[in-house]
Amino acid sequence: MYDLIILGAGPAGLSASIYASRYKINHIVIGSVFDAAMSKAHLIENWPGEESIKGSDLLMKFYNHAKKLGVEIIQENVIEIGKKTEDGSEKNNFIIKTENNKIYKSKSIIVAFGTKNRKLNISGEEEFLGRGLSYCAVCDSAFFKNKIVAVVGGSNSAAMAASMLSEHASRVFLIYRKKPLRCEPIMLDRLEKNSKVEIIYNTNVTKVSGNKKVEFIELDREYNGNARLNLDGLFIEVGSVPSTSLIKEIGIEVDESNCIKINQDGSTNVKGVYSAGDITNGSNGLRQIVTAVSEGAVAVTSIYKYLKED
Image (tube, rainbow, N blue to C red; front, side, top):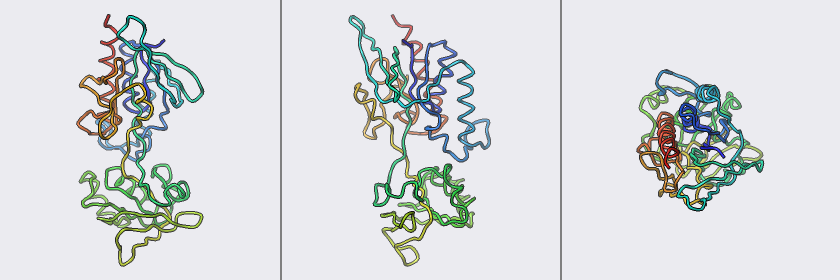
């Protein structure tokens, strides 16, 4: 029986682990650092103390820091979360089952699963995944050297993907359903000065087509007199959705966006369950590494007090 199990090995989970080790809370982390959205960030330029660093490099700094303090990080996926209340106790115990059918028990948990890629849900999206269609520019941009590609989205992640792809591709279209882009102004300035990038506003992609791989996409309005755009690759960067499918069976409340509702101390409506990072409705909706790290620290500080209660 552990005092705490942290579910998720992204910035929120690793930050929570660092604080838990310093509080000498008996804990483990379950999750893969490779699943963290942060690992797929091309460059991070708003983390204090690092003017510019790859997301994977910064994440490994978090990982190594947590490991140095002695935590065991179990690189498996969680497939089931259960709870049990002992007779005469107001507190829950939790049972975590992983993909390898291993069982772990704990007095408290932090849910820090983060988010997963949001899909466009258009024709051809599933069919061409891995055949020219990707959700990860960091992973796949090098395969499109001297090719024509498009990025769908208007956020920081979409702008970053377009910028990185321009280092490899001969032409990059950034397609956004509204105007202007939602990215930071400094990122928009860079894109507008990049001769390889062209932004197509007020346009949606409606279909992905090709033979054995992506060859063209269809648009809901004409671009340069044609509603078809010939491409070699399509990158979808339209945000993310919280990974909350596992937590609903133990009664954790979520909001209208499917984010876990947390209180100021990181607690949820279920006693002994805390949450941190992009999966929550905390930090005024600002989903950043700095807020994930902060929420992880807050949750563990609260758990330290919770475990001390009689």
